[in-house]
Each structure stands twice: as C-alpha cells, then as structure tokens.
Length: 259
Image 1 (spheres, rainbow, N blue to C red):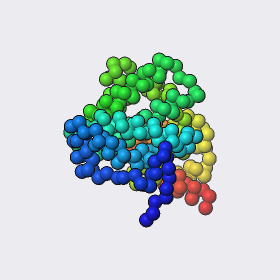
Image 2: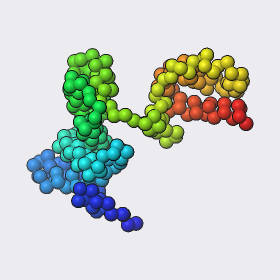
Image 3: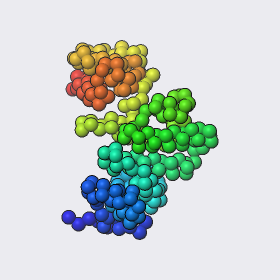
Image 4: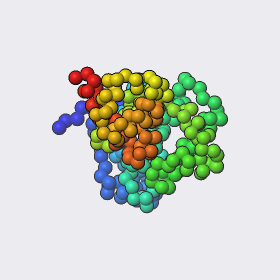
C-alpha cells in the first residue's frame, strides 16, 4: 500500500523509519554507552510517535510544524531519560512526556493569564510527575505528587486545574473497548434533583421497568447529582460499567416513554 506524502518541517512523513522493540533496545545500549549516532537513529525512528501524538491537538488552531517541533523536544527528553531497567515499552514512557511538552507550549502561548505562583507550582508538579513516572513506570496520583513536593494536596489540584486547556464536553477520555466515557460523564449536576423531574409519571413508570442496579445508578447520577466515578466507588464497580449501565437504562426509559 502506498502512503500519502505529507511533509512537516521538511520531513517526508511517508519515509519515516519504524524501529522494532529489540532494535530500539540495542540502540539505547549503544547511546548510553556514548555512541551519539545511536541517539540520532532513535530520534528518527520514533518521529512517527510524535506524529501520532500531535493529532490529538489538531483542533487547537496551532501550526502543525510548530507542534511537531515541540513534540520532538519531548521525544528527545524521553530518549535521554529512558531507563532500560524498568522493562517498559519506550512508547509507554515517551507519550506522556511528548504530550506534556506540547501542553506546556500551548499554556505558554495561551492568552488566558494564570498567576505566576500558580504556574510555578504547576510546572514543579509536572516535573515531579515526570520524575515519578520514570521511577515507578506509572501515572502518579495528585496525593503522591503533593507528598513529594511537601505541599497540601489541594494546592496541587488548584494549580493544575488553573493551567488546564479548555476541552469539549464530548471529548472522549477513556475507552475500554465498549462505549467511550466522555468529559460530560465526569461532571456532577446539582440542578437535576428530585423536584425537577421525578414527579413526571411517565418517568416513574419507566423506572419500574429497570433492575435494581440500574435504578440505583440513575438515582445517584440524576437525582443526587453525582459523577460516574463517585457512583462507581459507592457501588463497587468500574466507571466504564457505570457508563454502560447508565446508557442502557436511559435507552430503556426512552423506549418505554416514546414508543
């Protein structure tokens, strides 16, 4: 199959090489032994990884060339700091670092101003986050970052929230092979309480047709205004399961009410 030619920063992306895991491991050993040409091969062999990451930021109105260059900086940092002893795939380690580099670039060019003190806390938290990822090969919690920095958990959360870019409510944030979970699924709603629609007889009758777990989920989600994560924690199942059961129950309600 012939790939379409797309040139970014003078690079023909159709001709970019792809390295296998065993090839990368050998190159890392050579690079860490002082062979500079191995580092160059690792960079060129992982440029497709940068391309796959910058596709997530296509709707930001930024030039693709700029994002690609920034992503390459994140790639080079990943290559220079990757630890073979952790026995994880390089892409697993590199993708968060590339994303982090691009997000920092977007924040620095964001017209919405955040106080210097908040930015300093957030940037230090991002550095600690990357250090913990390198150390543990997993995403650290806000509590772990706060403990590492020696500051209150609430300060970390507030600072990180302050520098976040706006996102669509319909942006998918998780998919376990079934229905995706969207940003809007994470948001609680204090307005949809009992008084707003529980008195409608059609909905009451429809609820009677649901099983006990579905009733419980809808009650907590739409009458108590809780998020899917909160519901999942309370009833002891995953958020993905809550999402699927919620959608199934709503579909059944719509069928009973309108068909």
